[in-house]
Image 1: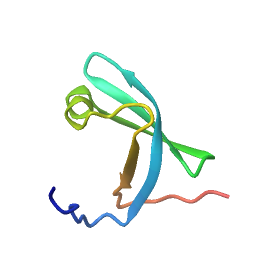
Image 2: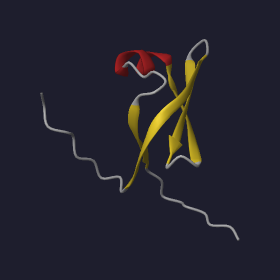
Image 3: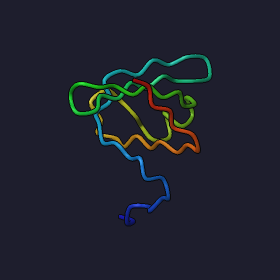
Image 4: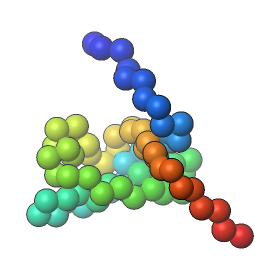
Length: 72
């Protein structure tokens, strides 16, 4: 087995896939983080198939952005 790939994105959140909704081309993947918050990602169906993503899988959500907004 290959070693995990290192990436430059610092915002990496571990979670569990709670729901996968497949469309014609894109899939919506809902990931629960810390049992309270969720992150929703849109990925291609081909990526979902290639990675074998299913409900209950442990995954890492990677957020890479040049802008991060904070509201109060």
